Structures are given as structure tokens and as C-alpha cells.
Picture (cartoon, rainbow, N blue to C red):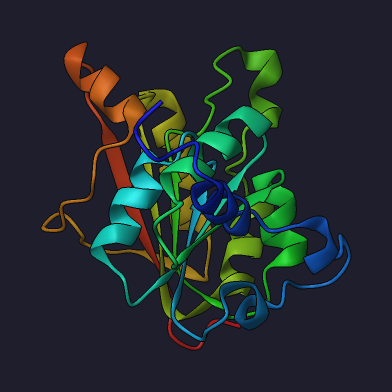
Length: 210
């Protein structure tokens, strides 16, 4: 354990990054200004894993609020430890699709990140994939005008499905974002070491789309 991580102050900071159940309802939008204790543009990392990407980007963009959403408690705790010194990060333990649909206020998000979602490669399991028409509908509702959704996967077949769904959705257009360098995720480093190509897509919410 790194020095200082067992101090009472550090543990308090870790706990403060986790959104307690007392601060939200499963049937009402989050009070983001209360949760972050300030008003700032919101970036949401869907399935934030161990928090490496989330915290690296939050460190870089201190003027933004960052919400990491993750289902697995171990990963949430790991993310909270990394975020202990970052006042602009909060963590929510929740299924990403549910949180996007029911807990994020309308037009409250500047940018979503969906990086290396579970590809569910077996055909009989593919209905479990997060990326669907309904998911895009929920993302569009939560995004502010001209908001963005960044997607990355190493699975070509999944990427082709993502691209088809995206092109067919009237509230989004594919935008050029190749000149922006983001921090690496744990999966991206692993796939890079294996020589696997990474497929990326950035969607912009179409102006005037409700």
C-alpha cells in the first residue's frame, strides 16, 4: 500500500468520492450540483473499471466534473482510491445503462466515454451488449447540445455493429476526433501489447435534436 493510503484523512477522501445511496433515488435524476459541490461541465465514464482512465483525464481537466459509473464493487473501490486526491471525481456503483436512462438529468452531460465495453462475443449473448438503439436514445437525452460520445473497442464485429447503429440514429453524427490523445485504459495497454487494432468512433449530438 502506498505511503499515506492508510491514514484517516486518506480514507475519508476515498469515501467522499463514492456517491452514497442516501444522495440518490433509483427513480429520480441525480442532483449533480449537490454531489460535486459545484457546477461544472460533466464528463461520464461508463464502465470506468479500475479508474485509471477516469482519474488521469480528471487530473488533466480540473475544470470539468467526472462521474465514473461501474457495476463491480472491487473496481469502484479501486477507482475511489485513485480519485482520493481529485475533488472533481465521483463514483457511482450501478449498471451503466440504467444510470444513463434513469439517473442522469436531461441535457446534463458534456461528454460520455464508452471504452472497451464487454463485447459478449457469443451470438446467443449479444443481446446483453450495452450499445443498442435504446442506449443511444438514453445517451442523446442526457447529452447537452453538441455533446459527445467517445467509443472504443478491439472487437471489429462489435465496432461494425456500433457504427451501423450510430449511422442509423437521427440524433447523432460521426465526428472527426482523431487529433485528440486520451490517457490509455488498462485494456488499451493490454491490447496494444498484443498487437490488436483499436477501433474508435466519436458521435456528436446533432444540433436541435431533442
